[in-house]
Amino acid sequence: MKFWYSARSSAVRVPSLHLSASSSMRRCVSSSARSCSISRAASGVSTRLIGATIFSRSVAAIPLFYTAFRDVGQSRSRLPEAGQYVIMNRDTKRCVSSEELAAMACRSRLFRIGLAALLLGSAVGHAQSLRDWRGLAARMVDEEIASAGVTNERVLRAMRETPRHEFVPANERRLAYFDMALPIGHEQTISPPFVVAYMTQEIDPQPTDRVLEIGTGSGYQAAVLSPLVRDVYTIEIVEPLGKRAARTLKRLGYKNVHVKVGDGYQGWPEHAPFDKIIVTCSPEQVPKPLVDQLRDGGLMIVPVGERYQQNLYLFRKRGDKLESEALKATLFVPMTGQAETRRAVLPDPANPTIANGSFEKTLDDEPAGWHYQRQLTLENNPSEAPDGRRFVSFRNDEPGRAAHALQGLAVDGRKVSKLRLDFSVRGRNIQSGQEQSQWPFIIVTFYDGHRAMIEEARVGPFHGSFDWRADSREFAVPLRAREAIVRIGLLGAVGELSLDNLRLSAAP
Image (cartoon, rainbow, N blue to C red; front, side, top):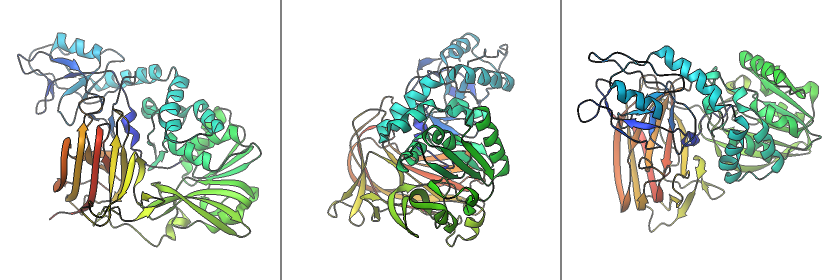
Protein backbone atom coordinates (compact mmCIF):
# COMPACT_ATOMS: atom_id res chain seq x y z
CA MET A 1 0.00 0.00 0.00
CA LYS A 2 1.37 3.36 -0.96
CA PHE A 3 -0.11 6.24 0.98
CA TRP A 4 3.14 8.12 1.33
CA TYR A 5 2.76 10.41 4.30
CA SER A 6 1.10 10.46 7.70
CA ALA A 7 0.57 13.24 10.11
CA ARG A 8 0.25 10.84 12.94
CA SER A 9 3.95 10.85 13.64
CA SER A 10 2.78 12.42 16.89
CA ALA A 11 2.24 8.91 18.20
CA VAL A 12 5.91 8.05 18.79
CA ARG A 13 6.55 7.81 22.51
CA VAL A 14 9.72 7.49 24.54
CA PRO A 15 10.73 7.91 28.19
CA SER A 16 13.55 10.42 28.03
CA LEU A 17 15.37 13.22 29.81
CA HIS A 18 16.79 16.48 28.53
CA LEU A 19 20.46 17.35 28.79
CA SER A 20 21.32 20.90 27.80
CA ALA A 21 23.71 21.08 24.86
CA SER A 22 25.84 23.45 22.86
CA SER A 23 24.50 23.67 19.31
CA SER A 24 27.86 24.80 17.97
CA MET A 25 30.02 22.15 19.67
CA ARG A 26 27.37 19.39 19.85
CA ARG A 27 28.48 18.49 23.34
CA CYS A 28 26.45 17.89 26.47
CA VAL A 29 26.98 20.80 28.86
CA SER A 30 24.84 22.71 31.32
CA SER A 31 24.58 26.39 32.06
CA SER A 32 27.08 25.87 34.87
CA ALA A 33 30.39 24.02 35.00
CA ARG A 34 29.68 21.70 32.08
CA SER A 35 27.83 19.21 34.27
CA CYS A 36 24.71 17.52 32.98
CA SER A 37 21.47 19.23 33.88
CA ILE A 38 18.59 16.76 33.98
CA SER A 39 14.89 17.52 33.70
CA ARG A 40 11.85 15.53 32.64
CA ALA A 41 11.54 15.38 28.85
CA ALA A 42 9.10 17.59 27.05
CA SER A 43 7.33 15.06 24.86
CA GLY A 44 5.99 16.18 21.52
CA VAL A 45 9.09 18.07 20.39
CA SER A 46 10.64 17.55 17.01
CA THR A 47 13.77 15.39 17.17
CA ARG A 48 16.34 14.82 14.45
CA LEU A 49 16.59 11.29 13.15
CA ILE A 50 18.40 9.80 10.21
CA GLY A 51 15.97 10.51 7.37
CA ALA A 52 12.92 11.24 9.51
CA THR A 53 11.41 13.52 12.12
CA ILE A 54 9.15 12.10 14.80
CA PHE A 55 7.12 13.60 17.61
CA SER A 56 6.71 12.03 21.03
CA ARG A 57 3.48 12.43 22.93
CA SER A 58 3.66 10.21 26.02
CA VAL A 59 5.62 7.34 27.50
CA ALA A 60 6.44 4.01 25.88
CA ALA A 61 9.51 1.83 25.49
CA ILE A 62 10.43 2.87 21.96
CA PRO A 63 14.20 3.52 21.82
CA LEU A 64 15.53 6.39 19.75
CA PHE A 65 19.06 6.97 18.59
CA TYR A 66 21.08 9.10 16.26
CA THR A 67 23.04 12.34 16.58
CA ALA A 68 26.62 11.55 17.71
CA PHE A 69 28.41 13.96 20.05
CA ARG A 70 32.08 14.90 20.02
CA ASP A 71 34.39 14.27 22.94
CA VAL A 72 35.86 17.62 23.94
CA GLY A 73 38.44 18.14 26.68
CA GLN A 74 40.41 15.46 28.44
CA SER A 75 37.61 13.23 29.69
CA ARG A 76 37.75 9.61 28.65
CA SER A 77 35.18 8.72 25.96
CA ARG A 78 32.50 6.28 27.04
CA LEU A 79 30.06 4.32 24.91
CA PRO A 80 26.43 3.79 25.88
CA GLU A 81 25.31 0.32 26.74
CA ALA A 82 22.84 -1.50 24.50
CA GLY A 83 19.37 -0.03 24.78
CA GLN A 84 20.57 3.48 25.66
CA TYR A 85 20.11 6.24 23.12
CA VAL A 86 20.76 9.91 22.64
CA ILE A 87 19.41 12.36 20.11
CA MET A 88 19.79 16.06 19.34
CA ASN A 89 16.59 18.08 19.61
CA ARG A 90 16.59 20.22 16.50
CA ASP A 91 14.28 22.93 17.82
CA THR A 92 15.69 23.49 21.31
CA LYS A 93 19.26 22.37 20.46
CA ARG A 94 19.28 20.17 23.53
CA CYS A 95 20.33 16.57 24.00
CA VAL A 96 17.45 14.17 24.59
CA SER A 97 18.45 10.94 26.30
CA SER A 98 17.01 7.91 28.01
CA GLU A 99 17.28 7.89 31.79
CA GLU A 100 20.10 5.37 31.77
CA LEU A 101 22.13 7.32 29.26
CA ALA A 102 21.42 10.56 31.08
CA ALA A 103 22.76 9.12 34.31
CA MET A 104 25.84 7.81 32.56
CA ALA A 105 26.35 11.14 30.84
CA CYS A 106 26.28 12.96 34.18
CA ARG A 107 29.03 10.74 35.48
CA SER A 108 31.25 11.19 32.46
CA ARG A 109 30.08 14.73 31.51
CA LEU A 110 31.78 14.66 28.10
CA PHE A 111 31.48 11.57 25.95
CA ARG A 112 31.62 10.21 22.43
CA ILE A 113 28.89 8.05 20.98
CA GLY A 114 30.18 5.57 18.41
CA LEU A 115 28.02 4.81 15.41
CA ALA A 116 28.60 1.10 15.91
CA ALA A 117 27.24 1.32 19.43
CA LEU A 118 24.19 3.20 18.18
CA LEU A 119 23.45 0.59 15.57
CA LEU A 120 23.93 -2.19 18.12
CA GLY A 121 21.63 -0.43 20.55
CA SER A 122 19.08 0.03 17.79
CA ALA A 123 19.06 -3.66 16.99
CA VAL A 124 18.59 -4.55 20.65
CA GLY A 125 15.89 -1.90 20.97
CA HIS A 126 13.97 -3.32 18.02
CA ALA A 127 13.81 -6.73 19.68
CA GLN A 128 12.81 -5.25 23.03
CA SER A 129 10.11 -2.96 21.68
CA LEU A 130 8.55 -5.63 19.44
CA ARG A 131 8.54 -8.41 22.01
CA ASP A 132 4.90 -7.63 22.79
CA TRP A 133 3.85 -6.67 19.27
CA ARG A 134 0.30 -7.87 19.85
CA GLY A 135 -0.04 -5.44 22.74
CA LEU A 136 1.39 -2.64 20.63
CA ALA A 137 -0.98 -3.50 17.78
CA ALA A 138 -3.97 -3.58 20.13
CA ARG A 139 -3.10 -0.17 21.54
CA MET A 140 -2.64 1.21 18.03
CA VAL A 141 -6.07 -0.06 16.99
CA ASP A 142 -7.79 1.31 20.09
CA GLU A 143 -6.13 4.73 20.10
CA GLU A 144 -5.61 5.50 16.42
CA ILE A 145 -8.10 3.45 14.38
CA ALA A 146 -11.26 2.66 16.33
CA SER A 147 -11.27 6.12 17.89
CA ALA A 148 -11.03 7.68 14.41
CA GLY A 149 -14.18 6.02 13.10
CA VAL A 150 -13.41 2.46 11.96
CA THR A 151 -16.13 0.30 13.52
CA ASN A 152 -16.15 -3.01 11.59
CA GLU A 153 -15.15 -5.57 14.23
CA ARG A 154 -13.76 -8.03 11.67
CA VAL A 155 -11.51 -5.32 10.26
CA LEU A 156 -10.39 -4.20 13.72
CA ARG A 157 -9.58 -7.82 14.63
CA ALA A 158 -7.52 -8.24 11.45
CA MET A 159 -5.60 -5.05 12.24
CA ARG A 160 -4.83 -6.32 15.75
CA GLU A 161 -3.65 -9.69 14.48
CA THR A 162 -1.49 -8.58 11.53
CA PRO A 163 2.23 -8.20 12.42
CA ARG A 164 2.96 -4.87 10.72
CA HIS A 165 6.61 -4.96 11.79
CA GLU A 166 7.15 -7.92 9.46
CA PHE A 167 6.31 -5.70 6.47
CA VAL A 168 8.68 -2.79 7.12
CA PRO A 169 12.49 -2.61 6.84
CA ALA A 170 14.43 -3.51 9.98
CA ASN A 171 15.51 0.07 10.59
CA GLU A 172 11.87 1.21 10.67
CA ARG A 173 10.42 -1.52 12.87
CA ARG A 174 10.57 0.53 16.05
CA LEU A 175 7.82 2.68 14.44
CA ALA A 176 5.71 -0.18 13.08
CA TYR A 177 2.81 0.22 15.50
CA PHE A 178 2.28 3.93 15.18
CA ASP A 179 -0.18 5.43 12.72
CA MET A 180 2.33 6.71 10.23
CA ALA A 181 3.57 5.97 6.73
CA LEU A 182 7.05 4.44 6.60
CA PRO A 183 9.50 4.17 3.69
CA ILE A 184 9.95 0.67 2.25
CA GLY A 185 12.41 1.55 -0.51
CA HIS A 186 12.14 2.33 -4.22
CA GLU A 187 10.39 5.65 -3.46
CA GLN A 188 7.42 3.80 -1.96
CA THR A 189 5.88 3.61 1.50
CA ILE A 190 3.69 1.43 3.67
CA SER A 191 0.45 3.26 4.39
CA PRO A 192 -0.63 4.38 7.87
CA PRO A 193 -2.70 1.70 9.62
CA PHE A 194 -5.76 3.95 9.82
CA VAL A 195 -5.81 4.33 6.03
CA VAL A 196 -5.45 0.55 5.58
CA ALA A 197 -8.30 -0.11 8.01
CA TYR A 198 -10.52 2.62 6.58
CA MET A 199 -10.18 1.44 2.97
CA THR A 200 -10.70 -2.16 4.02
CA GLN A 201 -13.88 -1.27 5.89
CA GLU A 202 -15.25 0.73 2.95
CA ILE A 203 -15.17 -2.24 0.56
CA ASP A 204 -17.17 -4.31 3.10
CA PRO A 205 -15.05 -7.50 2.85
CA GLN A 206 -17.00 -10.78 2.95
CA PRO A 207 -15.68 -14.33 3.51
CA THR A 208 -16.63 -15.33 -0.05
CA ASP A 209 -15.01 -12.31 -1.75
CA ARG A 210 -12.25 -12.48 -4.33
CA VAL A 211 -10.35 -9.21 -4.04
CA LEU A 212 -7.91 -7.55 -6.44
CA GLU A 213 -5.35 -5.16 -4.95
CA ILE A 214 -3.38 -2.76 -7.16
CA GLY A 215 -0.12 -1.72 -5.52
CA THR A 216 1.17 -4.52 -3.29
CA GLY A 217 3.96 -2.43 -1.81
CA SER A 218 5.07 -4.18 1.37
CA GLY A 219 2.21 -6.70 1.33
CA TYR A 220 0.63 -5.33 4.53
CA GLN A 221 -2.75 -4.46 2.99
CA ALA A 222 -2.98 -7.91 1.42
CA ALA A 223 -2.15 -9.49 4.79
CA VAL A 224 -4.94 -7.52 6.49
CA LEU A 225 -7.41 -8.63 3.81
CA SER A 226 -6.34 -12.29 3.93
CA PRO A 227 -8.43 -13.47 6.93
CA LEU A 228 -11.42 -11.42 5.80
CA VAL A 229 -11.94 -12.80 2.27
CA ARG A 230 -11.55 -15.97 0.22
CA ASP A 231 -8.68 -14.88 -2.04
CA VAL A 232 -6.50 -11.80 -2.53
CA TYR A 233 -4.84 -11.15 -5.89
CA THR A 234 -2.29 -8.37 -5.63
CA ILE A 235 -0.12 -6.70 -8.30
CA GLU A 236 3.07 -4.67 -7.82
CA ILE A 237 4.85 -2.86 -10.65
CA VAL A 238 8.19 -2.48 -8.79
CA GLU A 239 9.75 -5.91 -9.18
CA PRO A 240 11.98 -5.93 -6.05
CA LEU A 241 9.03 -4.87 -3.89
CA GLY A 242 6.73 -7.46 -5.42
CA LYS A 243 9.21 -10.28 -4.90
CA ARG A 244 9.97 -9.21 -1.34
CA ALA A 245 6.26 -8.98 -0.49
CA ALA A 246 5.65 -12.43 -1.96
CA ARG A 247 8.44 -13.90 0.18
CA THR A 248 7.14 -12.20 3.32
CA LEU A 249 3.55 -13.30 2.77
CA LYS A 250 4.63 -16.87 2.07
CA ARG A 251 6.88 -16.97 5.15
CA LEU A 252 4.04 -15.75 7.36
CA GLY A 253 1.59 -18.29 5.98
CA TYR A 254 -0.86 -16.14 4.01
CA LYS A 255 -1.81 -18.95 1.66
CA ASN A 256 -4.77 -17.20 0.01
CA VAL A 257 -2.70 -14.21 -1.15
CA HIS A 258 -1.39 -14.39 -4.73
CA VAL A 259 1.29 -11.89 -5.81
CA LYS A 260 2.11 -10.83 -9.35
CA VAL A 261 4.74 -8.40 -10.65
CA GLY A 262 3.26 -6.23 -13.40
CA ASP A 263 1.45 -3.03 -14.32
CA GLY A 264 -1.67 -2.77 -12.20
CA TYR A 265 -3.33 -0.60 -14.84
CA GLN A 266 -4.08 -3.82 -16.76
CA GLY A 267 -5.48 -5.65 -13.75
CA TRP A 268 -5.38 -9.46 -13.65
CA PRO A 269 -7.86 -10.62 -16.32
CA GLU A 270 -7.09 -14.33 -15.89
CA HIS A 271 -8.74 -14.28 -12.45
CA ALA A 272 -11.54 -11.80 -13.15
CA PRO A 273 -14.24 -10.96 -12.28
CA PHE A 274 -13.49 -9.69 -8.79
CA ASP A 275 -15.98 -8.92 -6.05
CA LYS A 276 -13.89 -6.04 -4.73
CA ILE A 277 -10.95 -4.01 -6.03
CA ILE A 278 -8.74 -1.86 -3.82
CA VAL A 279 -6.28 0.53 -5.48
CA THR A 280 -3.52 1.82 -3.21
CA CYS A 281 -1.85 4.23 -5.61
CA SER A 282 -3.42 7.19 -7.36
CA PRO A 283 -4.33 7.37 -11.07
CA GLU A 284 -5.75 10.51 -12.62
CA GLN A 285 -8.70 8.48 -13.93
CA VAL A 286 -9.95 5.00 -13.05
CA PRO A 287 -8.30 2.52 -15.46
CA LYS A 288 -10.91 0.96 -17.75
CA PRO A 289 -9.46 -2.58 -17.44
CA LEU A 290 -10.22 -2.45 -13.72
CA VAL A 291 -13.82 -1.43 -14.41
CA ASP A 292 -14.15 -4.33 -16.84
CA GLN A 293 -12.77 -6.80 -14.27
CA LEU A 294 -15.13 -5.75 -11.46
CA ARG A 295 -18.25 -7.90 -11.24
CA ASP A 296 -21.67 -6.31 -11.53
CA GLY A 297 -22.58 -4.97 -8.10
CA GLY A 298 -18.96 -5.09 -6.95
CA LEU A 299 -17.14 -2.33 -5.05
CA MET A 300 -13.89 -0.57 -5.92
CA ILE A 301 -12.04 2.02 -3.82
CA VAL A 302 -9.54 4.30 -5.58
CA PRO A 303 -7.69 7.54 -4.75
CA VAL A 304 -8.31 9.56 -7.92
CA GLY A 305 -6.92 12.92 -8.97
CA GLU A 306 -3.85 15.02 -9.60
CA ARG A 307 -0.44 14.21 -8.16
CA TYR A 308 -1.04 16.07 -4.89
CA GLN A 309 -4.78 16.76 -5.03
CA GLN A 310 -6.68 13.50 -4.71
CA ASN A 311 -10.01 12.29 -3.40
CA LEU A 312 -10.76 8.79 -2.23
CA TYR A 313 -13.77 7.42 -4.14
CA LEU A 314 -15.90 4.35 -3.55
CA PHE A 315 -17.38 3.00 -6.79
CA ARG A 316 -20.19 0.46 -7.24
CA LYS A 317 -20.58 -1.16 -10.65
CA ARG A 318 -24.04 -1.11 -12.19
CA GLY A 319 -24.02 -2.78 -15.58
CA ASP A 320 -21.14 -1.22 -17.49
CA LYS A 321 -21.14 2.00 -15.45
CA LEU A 322 -19.76 3.08 -12.09
CA GLU A 323 -21.73 4.86 -9.40
CA SER A 324 -19.32 7.02 -7.41
CA GLU A 325 -19.25 8.26 -3.83
CA ALA A 326 -16.59 10.78 -2.80
CA LEU A 327 -15.24 9.80 0.63
CA LYS A 328 -12.47 12.22 1.60
CA ALA A 329 -9.36 14.04 0.44
CA THR A 330 -6.20 11.96 0.56
CA LEU A 331 -2.61 11.69 -0.66
CA PHE A 332 -1.18 8.53 -2.21
CA VAL A 333 1.86 7.99 -4.37
CA PRO A 334 0.96 8.14 -8.07
CA MET A 335 0.10 5.04 -10.06
CA THR A 336 3.06 4.50 -12.36
CA GLY A 337 3.29 2.65 -15.65
CA GLN A 338 0.58 3.29 -18.23
CA ALA A 339 -1.49 5.37 -15.81
CA GLU A 340 1.33 7.87 -15.41
CA THR A 341 1.84 8.26 -19.15
CA ARG A 342 -1.85 9.17 -19.45
CA ARG A 343 -1.68 11.87 -16.78
CA ALA A 344 -2.86 15.21 -18.20
CA VAL A 345 -2.14 17.51 -15.25
CA LEU A 346 1.39 17.58 -13.86
CA PRO A 347 2.66 19.56 -10.85
CA ASP A 348 4.97 22.55 -11.28
CA PRO A 349 7.78 22.21 -8.70
CA ALA A 350 9.20 25.59 -9.73
CA ASN A 351 6.02 27.32 -8.56
CA PRO A 352 4.88 25.65 -5.34
CA THR A 353 1.48 26.72 -4.04
CA ILE A 354 -1.07 25.76 -1.39
CA ALA A 355 -4.35 24.61 -2.92
CA ASN A 356 -7.59 25.89 -1.41
CA GLY A 357 -5.77 27.94 1.21
CA SER A 358 -8.89 30.05 1.72
CA PHE A 359 -11.00 26.91 2.22
CA GLU A 360 -13.71 28.03 -0.21
CA LYS A 361 -13.83 24.71 -2.09
CA THR A 362 -15.57 21.91 -0.22
CA LEU A 363 -16.11 18.16 -0.38
CA ASP A 364 -19.01 16.92 1.77
CA ASP A 365 -18.71 19.82 4.22
CA GLU A 366 -14.94 19.44 4.47
CA PRO A 367 -12.32 21.68 2.86
CA ALA A 368 -11.16 20.10 -0.40
CA GLY A 369 -7.47 19.52 -0.92
CA TRP A 370 -6.67 18.95 2.77
CA HIS A 371 -6.32 15.39 4.02
CA TYR A 372 -5.98 13.58 7.34
CA GLN A 373 -8.33 16.10 8.92
CA ARG A 374 -8.77 15.68 12.66
CA GLN A 375 -11.04 17.86 14.85
CA LEU A 376 -11.40 20.40 12.03
CA THR A 377 -14.53 22.50 11.55
CA LEU A 378 -15.21 24.30 8.28
CA GLU A 379 -16.72 27.64 9.30
CA ASN A 380 -19.10 29.38 6.88
CA ASN A 381 -19.19 32.90 8.28
CA PRO A 382 -18.52 35.70 5.78
CA SER A 383 -18.64 38.35 8.49
CA GLU A 384 -15.70 36.74 10.31
CA ALA A 385 -13.66 35.22 7.47
CA PRO A 386 -10.60 37.32 6.59
CA ASP A 387 -10.84 36.10 2.99
CA GLY A 388 -14.01 34.94 1.24
CA ARG A 389 -16.81 33.20 3.12
CA ARG A 390 -15.07 30.31 4.87
CA PHE A 391 -12.19 29.50 7.21
CA VAL A 392 -11.21 26.50 9.35
CA SER A 393 -11.07 26.08 13.10
CA PHE A 394 -9.36 23.36 15.12
CA ARG A 395 -10.80 22.73 18.58
CA ASN A 396 -9.43 20.37 21.19
CA ASP A 397 -10.09 19.97 24.91
CA GLU A 398 -8.04 16.79 25.44
CA PRO A 399 -4.31 17.54 25.84
CA GLY A 400 -2.20 15.60 23.36
CA ARG A 401 -5.07 14.63 21.05
CA ALA A 402 -4.55 15.14 17.32
CA ALA A 403 -6.19 18.19 15.69
CA HIS A 404 -4.68 18.89 12.29
CA ALA A 405 -4.88 18.80 8.48
CA LEU A 406 -2.26 18.18 5.79
CA GLN A 407 -1.52 18.99 2.18
CA GLY A 408 1.23 17.83 -0.17
CA LEU A 409 2.93 19.83 -2.91
CA ALA A 410 5.85 19.70 -5.32
CA VAL A 411 8.88 21.93 -4.76
CA ASP A 412 12.29 21.62 -6.39
CA GLY A 413 15.14 22.98 -4.29
CA ARG A 414 17.25 23.38 -7.42
CA LYS A 415 14.72 25.88 -8.79
CA VAL A 416 13.34 27.47 -5.63
CA SER A 417 15.72 28.61 -2.90
CA LYS A 418 13.24 30.36 -0.61
CA LEU A 419 9.51 30.24 0.12
CA ARG A 420 7.14 32.85 1.51
CA LEU A 421 4.14 31.82 3.59
CA ASP A 422 1.28 34.29 4.11
CA PHE A 423 -1.65 33.49 6.40
CA SER A 424 -4.34 34.83 8.73
CA VAL A 425 -4.63 33.33 12.21
CA ARG A 426 -6.84 33.65 15.30
CA GLY A 427 -6.51 32.00 18.70
CA ARG A 428 -8.83 31.42 21.62
CA ASN A 429 -7.61 30.12 24.98
CA ILE A 430 -4.74 28.16 23.42
CA GLN A 431 -2.63 26.30 25.97
CA SER A 432 0.03 23.64 25.68
CA GLY A 433 -0.95 19.99 25.52
CA GLN A 434 0.32 17.13 27.64
CA GLU A 435 3.78 18.66 27.51
CA GLN A 436 5.01 22.23 27.25
CA SER A 437 6.28 21.56 23.73
CA GLN A 438 2.80 20.84 22.32
CA TRP A 439 1.78 24.15 20.72
CA PRO A 440 0.12 25.03 17.41
CA PHE A 441 2.42 25.55 14.43
CA ILE A 442 2.25 25.77 10.67
CA ILE A 443 4.90 23.26 9.59
CA VAL A 444 6.39 22.73 6.14
CA THR A 445 8.33 19.46 5.94
CA PHE A 446 10.65 18.91 2.96
CA TYR A 447 11.33 15.52 1.35
CA ASP A 448 13.91 14.39 -1.19
CA GLY A 449 13.31 12.45 -4.40
CA HIS A 450 13.10 9.19 -2.43
CA ARG A 451 10.51 10.66 -0.04
CA ALA A 452 12.95 10.73 2.85
CA MET A 453 12.51 13.68 5.20
CA ILE A 454 15.20 16.36 4.92
CA GLU A 455 14.13 19.09 7.34
CA GLU A 456 11.18 21.26 8.27
CA ALA A 457 10.32 24.93 8.71
CA ARG A 458 8.00 25.97 11.56
CA VAL A 459 5.84 29.05 11.93
CA GLY A 460 4.61 29.67 15.48
CA PRO A 461 3.92 28.67 18.14
CA PHE A 462 0.56 30.36 18.61
CA HIS A 463 -0.73 30.70 22.17
CA GLY A 464 -3.30 32.45 24.29
CA SER A 465 -6.18 34.45 22.84
CA PHE A 466 -5.90 36.95 20.01
CA ASP A 467 -8.08 38.31 17.23
CA TRP A 468 -7.52 37.75 13.52
CA ARG A 469 -4.13 38.94 12.35
CA ALA A 470 -2.30 38.67 9.04
CA ASP A 471 1.27 37.42 9.12
CA SER A 472 3.99 36.07 6.85
CA ARG A 473 7.28 34.17 7.07
CA GLU A 474 10.10 33.32 4.69
CA PHE A 475 12.28 30.22 4.94
CA ALA A 476 14.93 28.44 2.90
CA VAL A 477 14.23 25.42 0.71
CA PRO A 478 16.81 22.60 0.95
CA LEU A 479 18.63 22.00 -2.31
CA ARG A 480 17.63 18.32 -2.28
CA ALA A 481 13.93 19.05 -1.74
CA ARG A 482 11.51 17.63 -4.32
CA GLU A 483 8.27 17.50 -2.32
CA ALA A 484 6.81 19.04 0.82
CA ILE A 485 3.96 18.54 3.27
CA VAL A 486 2.17 21.48 4.89
CA ARG A 487 0.75 20.64 8.32
CA ILE A 488 -1.62 22.95 10.20
CA GLY A 489 -3.49 22.61 13.49
CA LEU A 490 -3.24 22.52 17.26
CA LEU A 491 -0.79 19.59 17.20
CA GLY A 492 -1.58 18.40 20.71
CA ALA A 493 -2.43 21.77 22.24
CA VAL A 494 -5.85 22.64 23.66
CA GLY A 495 -8.10 25.56 22.80
CA GLU A 496 -9.17 26.87 19.41
CA LEU A 497 -7.02 27.82 16.41
CA SER A 498 -8.55 29.38 13.27
CA LEU A 499 -6.74 29.81 9.96
CA ASP A 500 -7.55 31.40 6.61
CA ASN A 501 -5.93 32.73 3.46
CA LEU A 502 -2.88 30.46 3.50
CA ARG A 503 -0.66 31.26 0.52
CA LEU A 504 2.72 29.79 -0.38
CA SER A 505 4.94 31.21 -3.11
CA ALA A 506 8.54 31.30 -4.24
CA ALA A 507 10.32 34.25 -2.62
CA PRO A 508 12.84 36.41 -4.50
